[in-house]
Image (cartoon, rainbow, N blue to C red; front, side):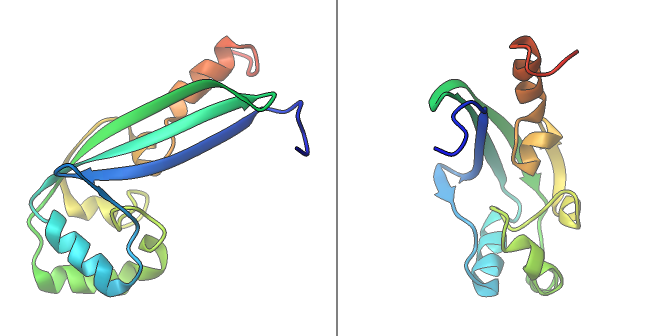
Length: 135
């Protein structure tokens, strides 16, 4: 371990679509198929974070967000993937709210930071309570 005296934060995100875990698309065709399957559906993003201190987990949190996707035409989905592939290939669900992603949804219930992939407010609260960050 390079820096045993430092805190380490790990995070990741998964998407639940009707009880099935969805991974990142591996190709534009996979992205198109995924977005077509999500069209008109609700899904849940789970964003997890863990803080390690001295190589031991000392805090964990999972944030949930429910997203309601609009009904998308096949033509629109294809054009969206063409325009955005370089960016969305790195995102579970093939969208980023900080880019064109909001156009996909009718409603989002939950914390914006969880959609971005990190339960940031909860993490900051924990780090403040433990005295790592000043308030």
